[in-house]
Image (cartoon, rainbow, N blue to C red; front, side, top):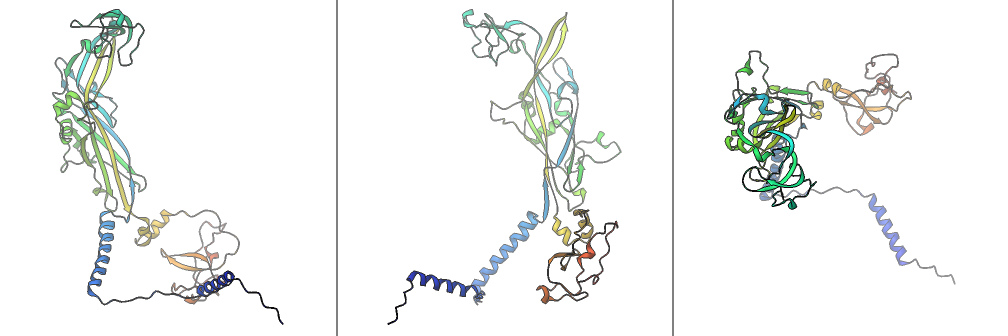
Length: 435
């Protein structure tokens, strides 16, 4: 009696069936089935969705955002400023050399409109300012000798002395005396300041597009000597009155001149470089930059001193200046038709392509390359990878490579190689040198 064959485990049999099923399904061909539904409502919804998508791309992407353009943000910029005008305080006439700080004419400068002057300061000992914390005292015991307060005016001597006015006392310090608030005198320079003129020369450059322009009109008739800025008639006369700048920023000039403040002059160069250079124009806007509604950080002031000698003693005049600081801020965006469109559709695409791409100077490989099929792109031959050999002079057939690129032979790649002794590439002759 023959021995019974061992049974195959159920799990192994299931695995074999699954493998055969997967192998059989691997060679199956699938194609989607299209069902046309004759329903007007559904069709209207379908076409409406298509129309909305089309409108989104045409109107928003191409017209509003101009996404077909290449862009460059943040142009290279240069700013030079110059202020002119005179003004007067209670007992002095001020010219531009005195009220403009710094005098170099950069993109950030200050125009002094009010000062607090402490004259004839000399090195010595005097009462500390009452504004300094823990400066008031009743006796010498309240003052520690050698103590230095970083917010004070000098080094304490340990004595308690009468203040400059009134009956109060403060600790004595070794410093420039008298201290600032003990003998300062306020002077207002803003009487004529609204009529100061400010010339703002600005030039920008977009290196990606090799485009440069300035904000001054190129004229030789002395135009800048008698013009002032106007948004319509004198756009390229960047001479602004200080009062105009403050007004455009929405501020009161007198209040701003007393407490000081920071005004931003924003120059925007948003240029569509597909258009002519005359369409690329600067746009000016003005706004206050310091937070005027926050008392602790509003306003603007700074200190400086003028030194001289009186009877051989070094003396100085300390000036706390309040003023209007001008910050000239330049930004913008340049946009230009993207490379793909230039390389594909422009009439001079061969010229642009020659400028866009650099050919390597090295010789082509000396080994004979595999024949390739050719493709017409930018009206020149370009070879796109190894394929089957084609007989010399044989026309291209769609069946050879699965693509119908049109009639005509494919040039052999050897005709595209550079010659080591020739300075120019030999012209390609269709149908020659085929293998």
